[in-house]
Length: 318
Ligand code: NAD
Ligand code: UDP
Image (cartoon, rainbow, N blue to C red; front, side, top):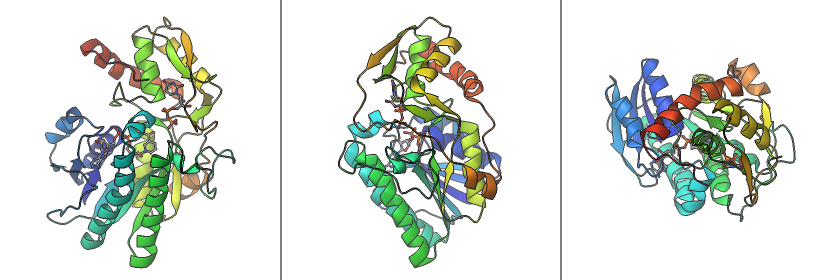
């Protein structure tokens, strides 16, 4: 297949592009580098079957040649990023998704949307099954991301029902691994960089809020399985192992050498109190479940951050 991956310079998009190339597909990567890195594209450039387009997908685009698949991954994903560029975030979730769906329709390509656990907002059902409609504050600061993704899901389903487009929706839960930007502001990148630099780990609030962290190889495998399945309903792909942010901090301190302390900072507005995927559908319909534990995944991730910290002035972003 020839497959378009938007957001290919980002953390997940670059891993996904690599996996698709490994599977023997040709990949057209697309990105405008708003939160991605040129290094991620450079590592793909040498590979047979890879080409790249620098473009803002919120603007229309004509893609040359045939396409059999589109993975729409372009969007800021770290709260620190999307709170800085809320309008671009709303545009890429809405106009960017519309442009990708239009390309999929013209080319007759299968379309997969990177959606998010954030469609559940600050959930009142725990763990979260796909049937839960969520609890999102549309006018709060996180609304720019959550509502863009909810709109993107609605638009994807409208193209599916109205135009008969072949679509997939993955609801991705907190994913981490090598190639996250050291300064992207998410909790795993912040904590590892702080731990490696011997700085205090910045826990927001009292650290009792929970998240469920999935290692990137597991996540990408679930996404690729969904793409090749027949499931057009949204599917959660994440690791159900749930940890408080305090517990995560303690593990990261241990794994980065034990030299750091923990300090508290104010909790951001509308920060979800709990999050854990119900992955019954992924298990039953995709035969997928994560294999890598949090501690093992951190051990596979820390060396990459160590290189960044030793090689330059990589810093956490709080
Ligand atoms: P990332 O910030 O590392 O990557 C996003 C990429 O999209 C970047 O390279 C950025 O430059 C690009 N991009 C943003 N707006 C663009 C635009 N208008 N035109 C072209 N390119 C644009 O984030 P990530 O963690 O790799 O997330 C990728 C996708 O997965 C996002 O859609 C995100 O919402 C989704 N997701 C990620 C997670 C996670 O834990 N990583 C969780 C849920 C959902
Ligand atoms: N968080 C934290 N310290 C940090 C960054 C984040 O305590 O330096 C918390 C944040 O408040 C949230 C959780 O960690 O409760 C996960 O945050 P992240 O930004 O990684 O993603 P989210 O799941 O909130 O989108």
